Length: 352
Image 1 (cartoon, rainbow, N blue to C red):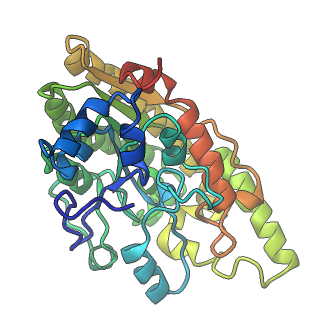
Image 2 (spheres, rainbow, N blue to C red):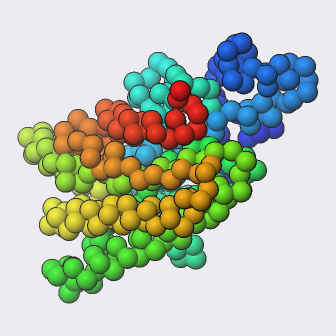
C-alpha cells in the first residue's frame, strides 16, 4: 500500500511514491520481529508512524521499461500508460492475488519493507546535462541521471538498490549515419565507451552517499537482458503473427521507438549489449577498488542474472506489442533477479 502522507513523496512531475508492506504493523508487533522495540515505541507515542516506517528496510529500483509493467500501442494510450503505470512488474507487485511473482513479493516473505520504483519508460544511461527531446519529456521519461538525483533527495537512503538500465542505449541504429549502418564497428565502440563513462558518472554520487550512511547498503548492477535469446522469442512472435495477422496488433509499432529491433540490425544490437555487459562488469570492479574495499558497510555487485535468463519463448512477450514483457515474462525476470540476491540480503542481515 502507499505510505502515509507524512512520509510520502510528492507525486507531481513523475515523482516516485514509496510503497510499504501492507501488513507491516502486524508483523513488527510480533515479539520475534527485529522491529518489535520500535513498534512498542510507536505504541507509546514515542515514535510516529512515518518514523516507524523509516526503520524498515528500504529497497529502490532504478531502470527502464524493461522493469516496468508497460507496453506500446497507440500514441495516446502509450502516453497515458507511461504517466500512470506503476507496480505490476517484476520488481514491484505486492497484490497477493495477482499472478506476477515479483522481487517485492519474494522479499515480503522475509521482512516487511518499503519499495521505491524510480524506473522510467524510454530511460537512457545519460550524461546529466543532455537535452531530452519533446516526446521523452511528454512521456515523463526520467533518464538514469534523473533517477539518481531523485533517489538522493530523501533523507532516508535505501538499504538495497537494484539497477537494471541501459537497454535503450543499445539502439545503435537510432540516428545512425547511413555510411555507418553497413560498417558499424567504430560506432559500436564509441557507444560502448559513452555508456561506460555515463554509467560510471552516475554511480559515483550513489556510492558517495552510501559511504556516509550509518547503515549497510547493498547495490546490485544487473547486466542487460539476454538479447540473443530474446530475439528468438521475438522471431517466434513474428512467425505467429504471419499465421494469424490479428495477433500482436502493435508488433511493427516497436520499430518507431526502437530502430535496432529491425531484423537487419539485431546482430549488432546483440554485439553492443554484450559489450555493455562487459563494461558493467569492469566498471563494478573499478568502483569496488575505488569506493568499496575500504568501506565495510557497502557491498557493490554485478549480476548476470538477467543477462543469462532464457527469454526465447513467445509467451514471455506482451500480446499487444511483442516487445515488452508479458506477465509470464515478468515472472521469468523476477525469478532471475531475486535468485541472485542472496549475497546482498545476507550482507544486509536479512538472511541468517
